[in-house]
Length: 406
Image 1 (cartoon, one colour):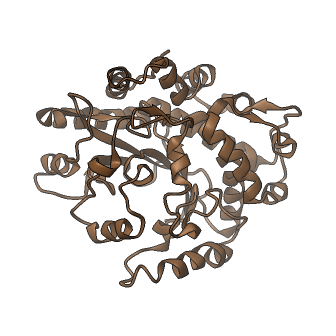
Image 2 (tube, one colour):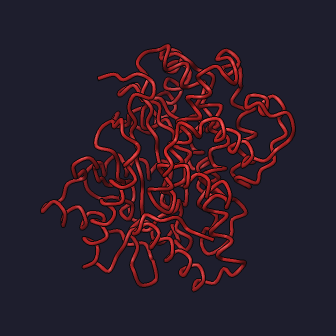
């Protein structure tokens, strides 16, 4: 069934399984799914939420079980599932941990790929790209799926999504530490995301998708080059171009949706869903024509947007934006930081957002991205003990569906 713009949504959240003692990643998603189901299955239908495996054996995905029109109570639904999973993991002395990267994981020695269903596909990916790097094995994100009904709606939505992508990490960055060290990037997940498919660069492109606004153009300019590039590696034809496309927003013509993928997972579903709501309301505003004409949105080249995106990956909400044409989209006439752009957007759409989500958004805008708050808690002490202490607090935030307060 096809849906119109913003009629329904699909949300996907990824979490890592870690041992309670020491927080080391624990690759037992298969045991968790078996315990829940009675036998091993890659997907579990748990009512309105579905659980499924991922590429690596320590990451679990929770997602809306089909499209939903109700974002209001979605954080509670996800939280109930998280509590159930944590109770199932008790006997393994394991729990779910949020944030977009494990701060102490050593991917080269700790990565275990999923060995069950789809393992042939995962093995092929591993052969081509070597999935034991941070960009493959140490990344957790939220995906937002937004529907389009036809080509006209696809073109509009794609134009608006492309414009918003560069500043999303200013809200959602949550991956400031790799292997016990500050990486210098608030969004380390996206920094490695840019290059983790360097063997076949056409798969990721510039992360910001090209100026394509019809299905036919998308196949010609994005899918066709990907299929050509993968052919020498995928001799058995087992890979689908919908999955191979790794841009920061991908067109899923198999289900008439655009999937946004540049959003780091937060400390709890309350934060994830509030961020999703702000992104969705901001896209609606961009499409309303109140800020800028649709034709003007379509004129932006991915290289110009990538330049902004690249700087935001590093400094998140504190990134200074000096591109006058970009600022003008949001009605801003002087150089400001990304936080101020989001504040301006929030001011415009606040009346469309429930009080619950308003409170969460306002806390994030006032106190900074999760990366900023994590680093504030760390306070320059990158000892394993201090890192474990702060990330244990994140585990509690997830278990209780509460924000990390600073």
